[in-house]
Length: 221
Image 1: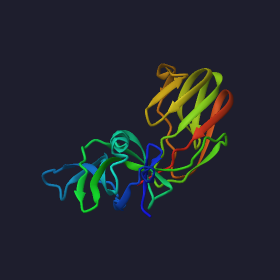
Image 2: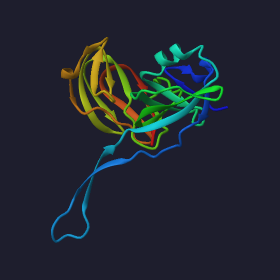
Image 3: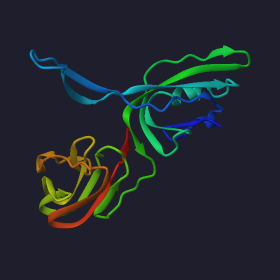
Image 4: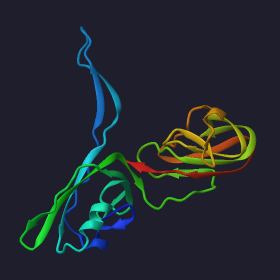
């Protein structure tokens, strides 16, 4: 039976009948094209992947949960479809939807606006220094380093950044932020935030480091 989970709540909780799940889509690449006189073809610059819509057709047999559904299907959260149970989409509900009556059912189309990458569900933080990005594109991990003083962080033997650590620091590479206990530490960092290539990656640090913890955040197109 088709279903979906949004904000960790299943559609079955409210007796929703999912009539049709959206297709699996490859996101569109944003591009900039440049035509140069005297040169064949055009130059294409890739600018990153676009967010896109995933519409879900639902039906309701009863009015019992309409208020709860209206409160639930708003804002942003993690989205999982039953036809892709191992993947998490970062999704938002931004458009209004109407529950129209059809025979004994009320029906609606819920449009989720999803970010271009989907994430592997169930990943946990690891202290292993060799980590596996199971996705098919680079991942932007979360890395927490426990230590003191100046630390050089290396990924696959290449230095990515230099950190001045007082006890610990967390690098959120998606948000491009370094912090400790909610306090931003970007000024104590030089260089770039690490990326993990698809496959095996080796994380290393030079300096007074007691522990490195990594959430890989494997992601897929």
